Image 1: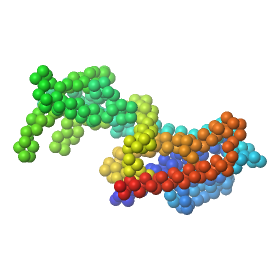
Image 2: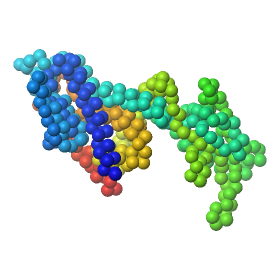
Image 3: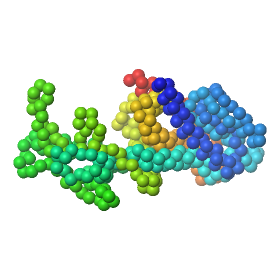
Image 4: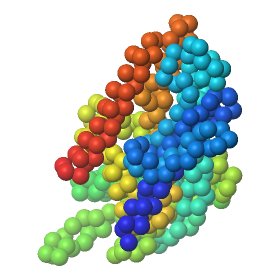
Length: 367
């Protein structure tokens, strides 16, 4: 059965690559560039067909590590070429083509963030039940937006569980210090109740319990805890179609921001490289999580789309961001950097990227 989930993960990854390359392809067609080949994957072609009308070659290759949209005259100096040759085109046209793949990925992230928010929700919790033994002013349907003024937002704010657990830890320390004779530990929970924003004062209740050895322990509760495998008291809030569309932009930017933060933390050694993963690790993660629940696919698609958008806009050789940088330099100078030198730089960059992807995959599974 796991093989089917692996195949599903490969299809999702290839779909994201397809979207990216289609962005380049469509922009190239609109701007009258001559396209020689449209390929998904690298290496030996599994499938290949050439259009009799346009002469364009369409390929599906064995390694799903990426893809490419090859343009006529892309690796020469543009001299003596036809008007459709890539490097004979004006710099602004080439920049549009280079950025079209990233744009297509980000639009996909927005679209699937929209679908995610109006089908299963994501980060903002909604109360579906609560324990009435704890006299807190909850109501079913309350949408929780802030804890002590801190917004609940996976990218630009805080995580709901993290914030609540932090308050409960403070409450536990408060009660253990025996200073609660002056009152109970409380915090403010901001909710949206039927379209009205309200601040609720939540009491964290101390409860003494015994463990299996009979030792008395102090625990704290707020009435939203799931006990003994029961269904959780909160679920992700599902937006209506219009509200989901409005927030889909923020969520897509959020996914991109999370990717950027992760890259920065990797570069600054705040997280180990073993936590990163290449193509195989990505496929493995998608397959494993999809086997647990198919709903995770709705999270993975916008995340991967945003990931590809951010990754490709970086000014690293062989990536779209680097091509844009070289084209901008040409535009400013009035002449290009030596094409042979540029091609060597991009080739070396591509080799480094392939090596990096392979190394992080090995480290991810070995260490």
